[in-house]
Every structure is written in structure tokens, then in C-alpha cells.
Amino acid sequence: MKRCFWVNLNNKLYVDYHDLEWGVPKYDDHELYELLILEMFQAGLSWETILKKRENFRLAMDNFDYERIVNYDEEKINELMNNKGIIRNRRKIEATINNTKVFLSIQKEYGSFANFIWSFTNNDVLYIDSKITHNELSDKISNILKKKGMKFVGTTIIYSYLQAIGVINSHECDCFKFKGLT
Ligand SMILES: [Zn+2]
Image: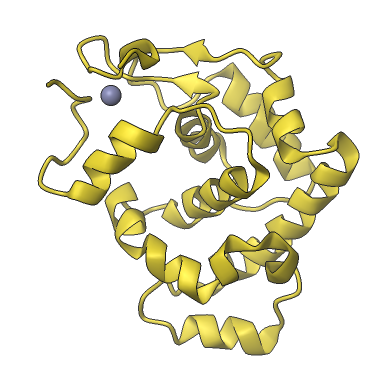
């Protein structure tokens, strides 16, 4: 069975992520939120590092409950900064709280974050089998999110995010997940 070239077959977490999660269209705001925050934490690091720490993040951050995270205070930030299981980067942790505020305001404005993020393609999945790291769509969404006040949402991060949540499907043509056919 062929998989996309980037999958580390020695890492079951990574194989499962590729096979079961990456590129599958997601419409649940909690899933959309978790991946947005994880992509943000990934900036400058490998996705494998993030996957290894994902369970620690869930434990440390109330299972990505955005209603709780939006209220994190200085004491909680310090607690997270002392947690060796996650990415201890104060700017990213502070950005998480900030971005959660923006996430909630988008939910309020559009009814759900899913409505917002899928509106850019009229609910269509875009099939882009290439090695590009951003496109016009990710440029556009990145700019809008930045204007709304989010941090760590550059176009490369957003492109990666769109692939993760299935707005863009980038499985390679010889991958068994190509075009979602399994
Ligand atoms: Zn694939």
C-alpha cells in the first residue's frame, strides 16, 4: 500500500494521522480548533514533534476546550511554561489565548468556524496534488485572520491547516488515499 512520501512509516502516530485524519473534510468546530492551534504551535518545528506531544497538549489544555482556554490567565500561562510535555513557547501560548478570542468572535459572526472556513470554497474540496506551500486561497485566509487579530497564521501555516482539515486534499496520485478513495 503506497502512502504520501512524507509519512514516516516507523511512527504509528504519523501513519494513523495520514490514513485517518489528514485531508478528511472536517466540519466540527472542536476539531477545526484543535488543528488550528496545533498548526500554530508547529511553526518552526516538525509535524511529528507536534503529534508526539498532542496528548500532552490535550491534558494540559482542557482537551482543547476553547471556552476554557479563552479565559486562561497568567497563572495558567506559567503552569504551561513549566509543562515539559508541550511546546514551551510563551509567544505561542499567549497567541493561543489571543487566537481563541478571535476564533470565538468568528463563530459568533458566522454561526460556526466551519461556516467561515468552508465559505471560501463554497463547501468544495480542492484537489491539489503538488508540493506548493501556499496558494491564493491560503494567502487570502491568512490575511483575513491576521486582520481579525490572529497571530502565527502566516500563509504557509494556513495552507498546511487547509490540507489538514480537508479543504485542500493533497494526497499524491499514487497514495491509496488519493482523492479520498479508500
Ligand atoms: Zn496520502
